[in-house]
Image (cartoon, rainbow, N blue to C red; front, top):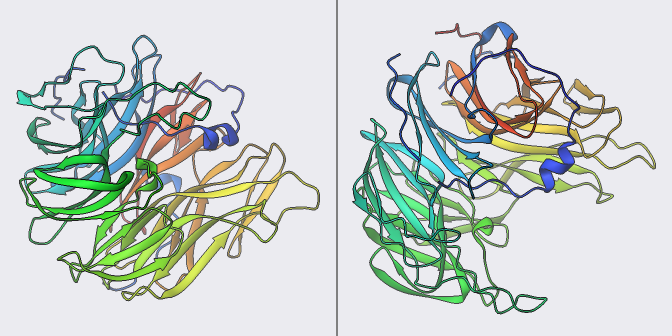
Length: 473
């Protein structure tokens, strides 16, 4: 349900607990009834009067988050997220199509075995990627929207096309047949890592798809038999618009990779593929999959600008290895570092360590980067972080921020968002006229005069801010 209600203030939670917790996965209902409802311009801080709507989407009493915002037709967006229902095991995957003015076309709570981590827009819908799991369920997820899905292992990868009406058009499965075995020793070395899945997807100019993911052992990768070097290896693969495998490359050694080791994928104007791979390497491939260059750069997320530059975000340690910096880097099309910007508190002597983290990234049509993050987390004391000449302060537990860097790395603006409660901005989508923001909060969320309540636990939100002085729709 979408709610805009007055908040009830509660004790603030420390972002340290949130950073230490494992991120939710997207799994797992029924469909809700649809509702009808180039140059570098000057760009100033989006003020509260540019906020056109704020929405939450947890069912009463549940916890949830917005993890991805994907563009859609006619200014619409697609929200991907998760919801935890305490009365049932696991997570439920939430998918919702939202109009430009915040109206909801439809929201789906998917069958609980299905996990969708990422998505990309295509003609007449979206491509979603993730996993489908047998773990914790007594029956296989045999179908969704009448489409048979033959899940054979404990958790297999899936690639699917979702139509504009919220119904699936096709679903493809990949993986091996291994079933998770229980740990019988302290090290659990004999437990089989069988959590296969697709991590990210990008759509090329010719309509083909590129995905990253993880396979285990002797696996069926969309109709092609592959054998991993370790128990599980990462992969990059190109698929047809209908999900058929065209080529693939495996990455990994004798050590085991996990799905969290596999990063995102993006396609540049030259149709080159840039993927974040295990070990921290950012690698560019030709359209046919030939390696072109590799760069050691922090890349928790990355995007490619219209000129082919690659922008990354991540976190790096300071010189004393206790303060953690939000780091934003820009590489040229050949993988050479153009600039890197780092933001963190200058920690007072003997003071408790703090963290500044970049959580989300989106580029506009001119290649300017908007980044969502948190600053001054991990410490319950007053703290300040300098963003260029602007100083943001927090009285303890951490606050979220949005910032905008131009293609030269110059700060155009920075502002706090969602204070005074705990908020993590996990998802961003930037257009010429708008910034769509999503994530999770606790204790309440306030932005631009809109307020969401949240007494206990974490709750998902989405919001629209005007961009660079553009009016609200």
